[in-house]
Image 1: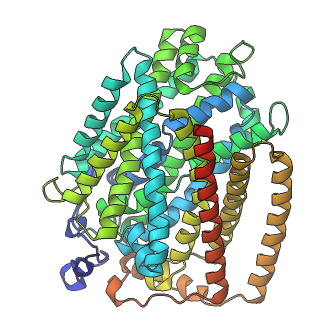
Image 2: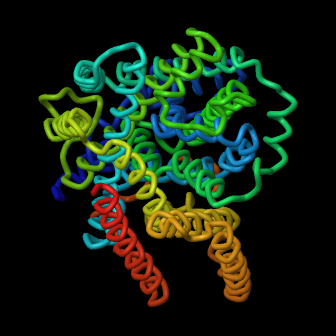
Image 3: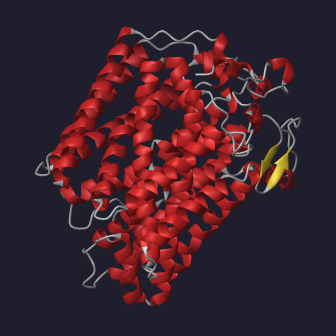
Length: 549
């Protein structure tokens, strides 16, 4: 790693409140797709119009990361949920809103306060061992996810009769072109085109003639059509896995830094993320409702094949316009998903190797950054074009792998957000730690269920879910009792810091920070988590090879 990059922007040479970044291109005016904020502005806004203009300038990272998560895998999963269980699983999406907001809010603070990407922070604060463990898994998962996005491209354009040997290369070239402009603002404007296209699900839903009362009832009243079968539980887990993904943490943190958002603007970025969370869940819910109402009571209900087939079936049931809209939604989801996931990986490459990594630089000025982006896009597209490639198997394996890796990514996030040297007065309050701990526990439970069902298809998922839920509740009670007995008073210091001091507090240069020392209990817990992940990934690889043969 290039340690000399740590001090590119010493405090004496940067505006107050701007963190010490690893790339000087990350310092300057915020030039968003919808507005500009000068680097010297204090963050004070008076009147609704002034605040709205600031929000429009800041908006982007939160909205894009959320809409990007409604990717090809997401469209496929939501369509399957509606075609198989009607609207009865809409309540799952409602529960995911706080999970998305809590996870990504922690990422917002890390990005704005530290000026350092998620991958680099893990390496610097936890060492090369844990850094390689976390980022290595990310690279593998992200590459496979990008492959699934190009599968979505081939299915979407296949609906229009376009050969995948033409569709996939054109899509790959388009992604590289819109990312290589050397302007963050230009890139973000392209992403807004994808965000707007995402709203085609609304007229598509209208064409399906939805029963609003039925959809509302299932959104706020949990139920499962046909009862809680193993297949239903697995699909619920798939919905969680496709809506909350590890790459989101790496993408939004680095994208916030690249957009030059500082602590003064954190509240606006929080609003951006909350808006994005509702947009993504509304879009997902609309997709579930489309297939639920279009296929309910027909011979297509309960017979999901893939997203491309859904487009054809909608064309038959609702008319060619509906089929065309769904294919466009799938294509759009695949492109924005591929753009965001690939960029998250390129940001991580720049973090790990200390190379220039900013959309504000041109390709000749950040060769590794853009080179890694183009290489991953080309390689993923190439896999999809291999004759006879097990594309369906890849898609299934990616969902399982994402479910396995998500808990560890969230654990690292929680540890970083409680590191006082890193976040100072921006550290997590106790109540947020409690919520995040519950989220991690539930994610671990879902990961175990998904792994067990992948390895042992005959396992009774419903019983396993009940047993693990009981263990989880007992564990939470034990943690709560321990926390009450050993409650520290350190959080008082954070709550007493003035608003002005918080708005100007940034992390000191990484070279000046002592690496935190883990307690024996924390080290044992992390090693246990690592052991589980290693075994789970190896078993998943073995299972994938077996299915391939």
